[in-house]
Length: 312
Image 1: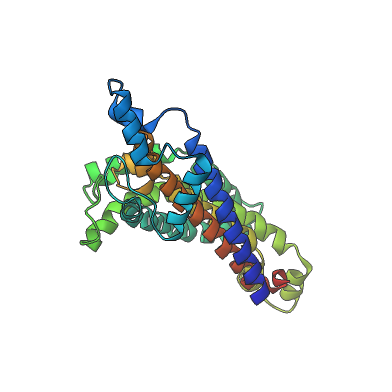
Image 2 (image 1 turned 90 degrees about the vertical axis):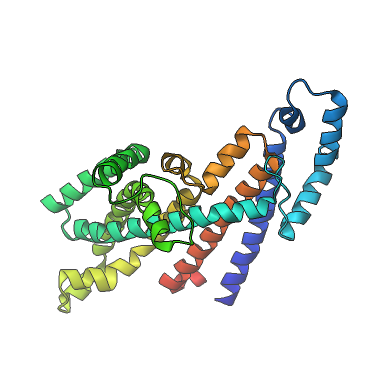
């Protein structure tokens, strides 16, 4: 197990290094000059040159990358040119919204999908299975931003049970959780539909294996064979989808964050792109990529826990 973890850690470090180089190169190659954008079209060339020197844009590209990477390794992601504050602090503030939102949405998706997927697999080919598959197809096709607006109209405007938007901060935990509940449900619905279909397919394949028939021959009921034996062996594709879904929920919730006016990380990246604040874009995207790689690493470890054969 130690060798398995060591190999995965080395792979994680190399992936982060390559990702940092790609992110820096792609952002730096974006057309346009941030200094000219910030000062406007009427700025004097001397003023633009002075600002470029202050921002370090006059240095060669490899040297700028090394300076930026050295700061990243020490936790310094630079200072925002627009907000005049440390980028790391801005990202940390926004992650206090995006990370709980992603975790809550993922938990809701799993709570919905696991019983539905098991129900459909246990009734393969029957009316219950057909109904579940039809419902999940609708869930996948339904745009989450449109579903989010329906949730706002019902629970915020009509029933007045939950807030329609905004985030009060974690000084008021109950109010903060209430403000995240509707966006989490809007994000969780399509993910639950995908997860339920994957689980159902994996369970149907597993239930046809010889060891399941042996377990049934020894006296286990269909439900016992499914929950005790089939479920664990069907978890590997489910864990893969969960890891991918968490990455999507963390990085791809920008539309939902705008619908509910949440000050999350996706919204920060969108604002930084429109303002040509490239240092914020680099830092935020690197954090998201690092989170995706870390989640992939944790999923790999969970593979080894579920199936000990994979440790070799």
